[in-house]
Amino acid sequence: MNHLFFQLNKLKDSLKDKFIFLFLDYDGTLTPIVESPDKAVIPRKTMEILMGLSKNPHCRVAIISGRALKDIKNKIGMEGIIYAGNHGLEIKGPKIKFKAPISQGYMTILKKIKAILKKKLSKIRGAIIEDKGLALSVHYRLVDTKDTWLVKTIFHEALVHYIVSNKIKIRPGKKVLEIRPSLEWDKGKIVLWLLARRKFILGKEPCVPIYIGDDITDEDAFKALKNAGLTVFVGDPGNSHAKYYLKNTQEVTEFLEQILKIKRDEDVCQD
Ligand SMILES: [Mg+2]
Image (cartoon, rainbow, N blue to C red; front, side, top):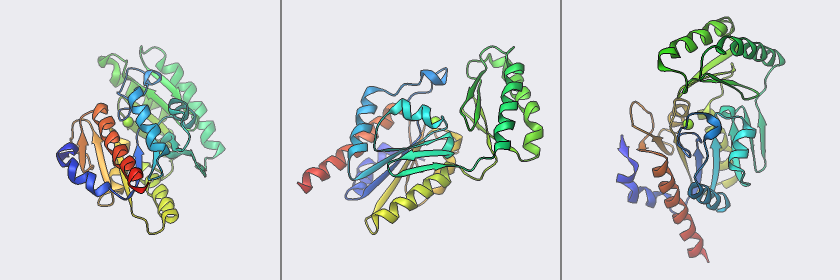
């Protein structure tokens, strides 16, 4: 896998005079991964660039996050951006509002699971249960390494019955385990759906999708956009399906700045 900056000039040319649909993950992509999720704050410079991109008529920004919709919207707080929370179970943006069909039965199960996990994980220091409304996350970044197996065991024992009966799905991430509804709906499917919608609006105007993400859940989007867009993994490139990689969130910010510059220059040309 190539580092994106090795190909930057060529890539920059390919982005000119085209509508850019920018799909961005949040944690680990726009903000460095921190000890607990509430401490992840987006750097001011990244924020300013995002603001510029969100207002530019030649691009659209969508933030696709595992966080709850309300949470991710509050963290960024800009108009003109599409926010997809809970890995796309809830989406809100300009002229778009979507909520996945979720049964009352699932919500009851989630409530039960939360109570069980709260009780059983209470004796493990550093285990954090995050209630995201439609999904539930157990973070174990702060748990002592020797105890992480215990967190995973408790988690799976509490859930196995519901997994086997296909009532819920488990999605692992970076030091986090997520419980979500058993739906065929992932970051890849969301990206393709949003993209199809945009292409319908754009008609024949060329559109380049760019997806940047750092975690396992982003792989679905990398696969979905294979040969159809620019996919960028953030971190040490291992077995990712992305085409390029960037080393860290600072490099992501630099790349976003380059995109903004290209699109701003187009504005000047048009004037
Ligand atoms: Mg991430």
